[in-house]
Image (cartoon, rainbow, N blue to C red; front, top):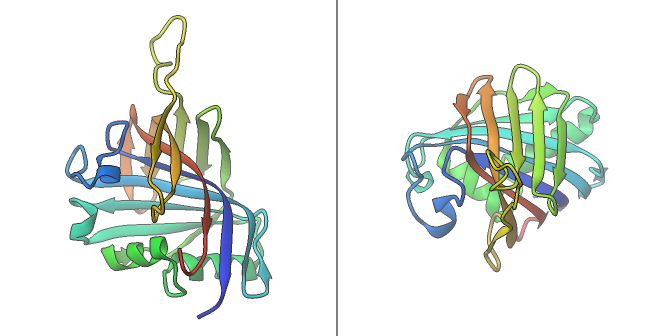
Length: 206
């Protein structure tokens, strides 16, 4: 198993109502679970492969609660990364080199679609609770603070979910996914859905 580490900005937008029930061990809002996750790696490595500045995204669908499994997933690897960096990120995302988060995903996803290599347009501003991730012909999603939509003089909420030693994140700012659209192998189309924005540090033991 190769030693690795990823640190950076993370977003997850899913089809649940804002305040994803999965964070509280409850069933997804619509029973099924679908959406995306993505990361801007500020600092990272896989063995001797430097991963600073790389990006990845992932679209997914489960027909029911995640713990029941039978999910579909598709990795998206940034075209600006080198071949070695993309291979390294793909190895980490596979869950075969440790890490609780990626290991759990590998157990509950039955079908991994071939990775997409494409330009990833992503920006995550945790403090402002705003983010977007766009991949041509595959994914388009945007997040903004809860309370802005339809309010003449916005007074956006700041809502946080804190999960000490959480396998996905320890602390997340909760926002609203105004657009959540998958147009690749995994298709979905939602608005007004859930968004989590967080800073994460992941390694084989976490």
